[in-house]
Image (cartoon, rainbow, N blue to C red; front, side, top):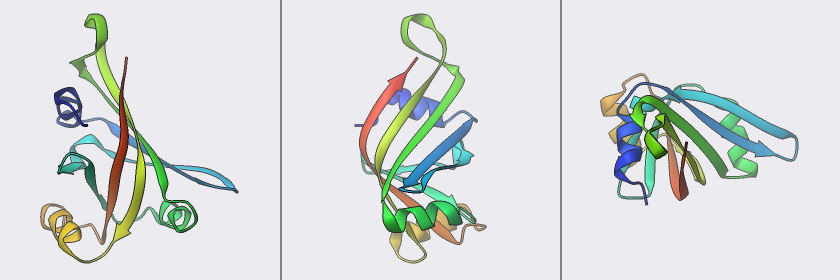
Length: 124
């Protein structure tokens, strides 16, 4: 599901927006492209030290949208830069295999945000 172009994007620094929502409205927080760890073809692990509003939203609605981009990666038709919109479901974990993978690489993380990718669309 996640193609080579996606991996190129997350290997360059840039911001990742993480959007969650409930009936009260939407919430957006950010992290960095290079913090994303992809395991299997459809799971993304993200280190979390804050993200308390996102965590609260996920208790009501576990859907998320992530967007990320990198100017250094060529997009469609030779366009300078490209990005992705990822839709999926997510949960925070503070123990277990996924948390251990995140915490080993990013000791500041007190939780792992695990995104189960349902759709990945290249933009630009």
